[in-house]
Amino acid sequence: MLRQRIMAALAALAVTGVLAVALPMASASSASSAAVAACVTPWNSSAVYTNGMTASHNGRNWSAKWWTQNEAPGTADVWADQGACGGGTTPPPTGNCNHPNWAAGTWYPAGSIVKYTNGQYYRAKNENPGYDPVISTWYWEPYTCGGTTPPPTNPPTSGFVVSEAQFNQMFPSRNSFYTYSGLTAALSAYPGFAKTGSDTVRRQEAAAFLANVNHETGGLVHVVEQNTANYSHYCDTSRSYGCPAGQSAYYGRGPIQLSWNFNYKAAGDALGINLLGNPYLVQNDAAVAWKTALWYWNTQNGPGTMTPHNAMVNSRGFGETIRSINGSLECNGRNPAQVQSRINAYQRFVQILGTTPGGNLSC
Image (cartoon, rainbow, N blue to C red; front, side, top):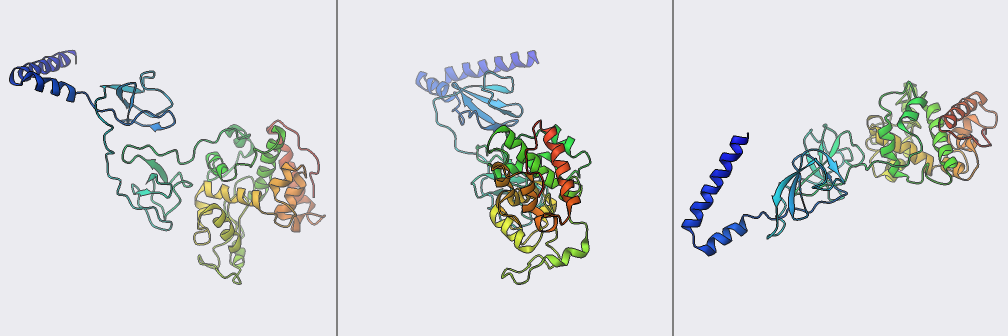
């Protein structure tokens, strides 16, 4: 390797000598100036760089060897020095950016590249029927086009009061569909969830949400409603939009078992996802499933008088969340065993999270 570098250096000197003889002094000077590479796009501390991506910093061009973020070129081994730069302008973007706009409901084979509504590009990691790139991170990944780096599809969620280890402790037998990453990816849809009030209130709300989810899914085991005989009952044909996915397509799915065509439409409208047309997303995409549960928790009163979120942050107690979720069938003595099942899970979860349950546990 050393011999190769020496020979390359000698060859470069030989060429330089020939040019010096063959060209006038002014031309040789121009050639030397042109040899200084133009600086590529400046390094951005918040951007993500992967193997082969370039950036300029402190008058030099650099190339990333592997994934990096917020590691300045010249201070970390992840960057390979490409030499001095300057004397020119940033080169125009390279690469083909003539990719089609993403369209919901369009079938995309793996490898398809689309331009999303935020102006960023995404590539299909797995074939899919037009899932939303900023929600369905298992199906899509950010794609670098024209020298720009798109932001992460779902920026890491910081400050969630439930760690992955605690989540696994709560649900030791959970279905692999219900991922912790799917839950944390969904949190951005409702930033006030488990982040309102004191640390105790935040932990209590997270525990209350997960305790009700635990009850609805048998410990995060069931993704869809188990009684298939009920499936055809969840289509309210009196609604003007009907049931475009079929009369039996709106059965319970996800952490809070979203059901009925009108709930799929309302949740989809709120989340920007066509759940009325494609309710199967709730059982196929973990982030979507968790978002529908958070939609209900944060926006729906159900048979109660307030949302479960408001019940917890306004000190109305865990019992009020039960009323908002299934109070018409369980509260006021209708089904005390079911109520107690939810309470037991809540008490166990607050203990895992290191806090107290508070008052008003029953409804």
